[in-house]
Amino acid sequence: NTFPQPYGSAGCIVDGASIYWLYLGSPALIMKAALTGGTPTTLVAPDADGGPNQQVAGTGYQNLAVDGTNLYWANVTDSTLRKVPKNGGTPTVLATSPGPGPESIVTDGVSIYWFTTGPNVLMKTPVGGGASVTVVSGAPVVGAQPGSATPIVAVDATSVYWFNPPNLYKAAK
Image 1: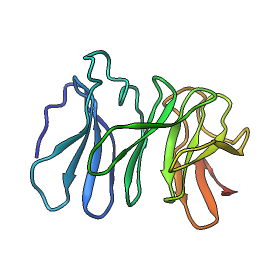
Image 2 (image 1 turned 90 degrees about the vertical axis):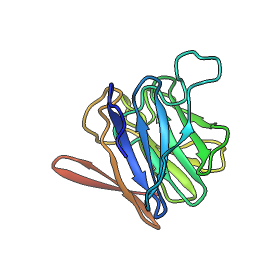
Image 3 (image 1 turned 180 degrees about the vertical axis):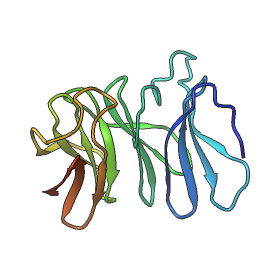
Image 4 (image 1 turned 45 degrees about the vertical axis):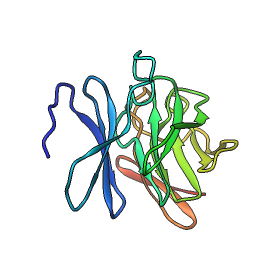
């Protein structure tokens, strides 16, 4: 399917059954479509009060993550990390960044890993909610402004990885 692109889109991710993406039109939306085709659906729409879309506004590169149950995204406008069930529902705030961010999120199904920008702190937050903890403080990353954090490349059973050209970094989860 084709969508009008007055402002473009930012970030997409697949989970084996669906593709999810941030549509930065007016209004901004989080969309979902089956990989087999069909009509896309809106997973997260603007706030009910008709005001600025604080649910999805201000998102940047690679700010989507997905696990078996939920879709996660970062909102750099209000410095929150949020989730919504993959089949729709009410978005939930999981964490608020202590600095600018959150940026560059990834999940292992247990925790969400994300960077704050400026102080460059790699954080993790349980997918079910709870206290965020620092994984690495002063992490080497490219950029120090919201929207310019280095993407987290991957997580595995024991580590989280990120790239700061020309180096690849690894930290224990």
